[in-house]
Image (tube, rainbow, N blue to C red; front, side, top):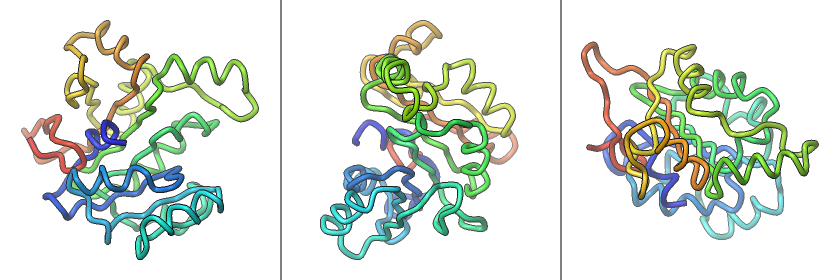
Length: 206
């Protein structure tokens, strides 16, 4: 929801294009729009027809598509998004790196991959232990996320950098924050010498 929207990036307010992977009933959309996303440039993707019926009823005229992230038209190149959001969804991918590689290929400009789970990494670890046939992965650790970012040529933004309440600079503090509320972003490199910023919500505004 609102905190996950902190991670999005790129573009000016009201113009940000977002792909919401595992969008469910579209609950994140109002928060994303408050943060600068453009509902006309939003695409929600989910496997559940029931959830998508609810999403379309709540957000008429907005694009929602049923299908797998790996095959859906909304997630097919050459689509260009400013942010691809995995909010409570990344743990359902057996090969997270492959999913994130595909997502990175959909980004334009200084776009971001946003990895979020409202209940935190500790919750996902417990769910994966109890239901491994459904929850196929745990959330990436800081080190794993940084490694994935390096492979993709992207910069890791930590909870502190993204403005998560209670997060503090430093590895241990960020790890603790991720266990309670998981939010990381990977940002494409900007122009030479531009280090980017944590930014505000889905806009990337400082």
